[in-house]
Image (cartoon, rainbow, N blue to C red):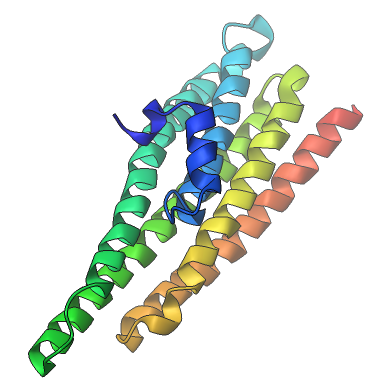
Length: 210
C-alpha cells in the first residue's frame, strides 16, 4: 500500500515520530497535493454552470492536470522517502579499506543526487499548481475564490519547503557542475514561483473585494 493509502492520522504520527521518513520533502509533496486538490475543487465548482460556459474547456483542463498532479505527488512522496533511505544505507557501508571508502563515497554521492532531484521535481510540480491556482482564481466560480487562494498559498509554501531539501544537500555534492545546475534550477523556480504567487494573491483579493 502506497503512502496515499495511509490514514491521515497514520501519516501525521509517522511524520511526528523520530523516524526520518516521511520527512520534509514528503510533507512538501503532500502539501502540494492538497493545493492541487483545491484547484480541482474550484474547477469542479465552476463546471456545469451556464454562467461559466465559456471557460468550461479551461476548467476541464485544470481538473485533469490537478488530478495528474495528485498521482505524481504520491509517487514523489515515496521517491523522497526511498532516496533518503538509500542515502542512509550508503552511510552504513563499510569503510575499512581505500576500496571500501571509495565505493561508499560513490554510493553516497549517487544517493545525494537523487535526494536532490526529487525535491526539485516536487517544487516543479508545485509551480504547476500555482499556475492552476492562478487560472481558477481568475476564471473560476467566484464563490470558491477563497479556495483558489488556499491552493495558491499551499502551493507556494510547498514549493519553498521542497527547495529547502535541495539547499541542505547542495554543499555535500562533490560534482560542482551538477551542484551549480541544481542551484540554478532552484533559483529559477523561486523567482518564477514568487511572481505567479503574487498574481494569485492579487487575483483572489480583487475578486473577494467585488
